[in-house]
Amino acid sequence: MKKMKFALTVIVLVFLVLQYSFIAQAQNISKNQTNKNTKKENNMKTTDKFEFQALPYAYDALEPFIDKLTLEIHYGKHHKAYYENFLAAIKGTEMESMDIMYIFRNISKYPVAVRNNGGGYYNHTFYWEGMKASGGDLPTGKLSDAITKSFTSFDEFKKQFSDAGKTRFGSGWAWLSLDDKGKLFISSTPNQDNPLMDLTEKKGTPLLVMDVWEHAYYLKYQNKRPDYIEAFWNVVNWEEVAQRYEKALSQVSK
Ligand SMILES: [Fe+2]
Image (cartoon, rainbow, N blue to C red; front, side):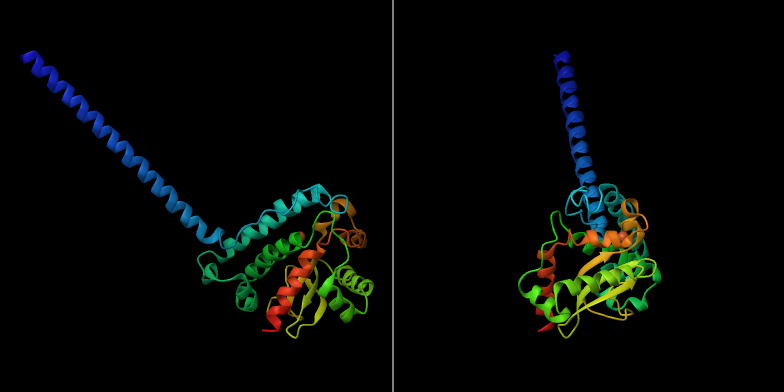
C-alpha cells in the first residue's frame, strides 16, 4: 500500500513538473513573439513611410542602353546610400513623420544632409520609374499635344531636354516639369536638388527626369555624356510620364 502511495505521488509530481514546464515554454514563445512584433512595428515607423522601393525591372532590363553593372551599382550602392543617409539625417526629428513633399517645400529650413540625401533618395526612385525595357516610343494623347504646344515639336523638346543634361556643369539632373499655371518647362538642377524644393529657381511638379551624374553612365560611356543622353531616349517610359502629367494637371486645375 505504501509503495502504491509512493508511486502515485511520484506520478502526480512528474505530471505537475511537466505541466509547469509546458506553460513556461508557451509563455516564453508568446513573449518572444510580442518582442518580435514590437521590434517590427518600431522598425516600420521609419522604413515603411520612407521605403527603399525595389527596382521596377531587372538589372539588365535596360541593356544595351544602360548596362547591368551600372544599374547594379547605381541602384544598390549609390541610391541605397542616399536612402540610408536620409533616414539617418531625419532620425529623431520632426521630419520622421512628415511627407517628403512637405520637406522639399520647406527644404531651406533643414540641414543640407536632408537636402542632399532626401533629394538623392527621391530623385532616383523617380528616375527608375520613368524608364522601362523597350521604352522610347513617342508620347501620345494629352501629353503629346502639350509637348508640341510648348516646344513646337517633339524633336525640339528632345533637343532642349538633352541640352539641359549636356550643359549641366558637374553633377545633376535634367527635368521636364509642370508649373503651377499648368505649363510644361525644362530645367536642370545641380547635385540632388529637384523642382519640388523651395530653393530651386524653377519650381514645379516633375514629370520626367534624367540623371546626369557620372555614376549614371561612366562605366559604359566614360566621358561621353552626350552618348548616354542619346541612349536614354530608348528607355523612357512614356506611359508613366503621361500618367504623371495627367495627375499633375488635375492638381493644377483644382
Ligand atoms: Fe544617380
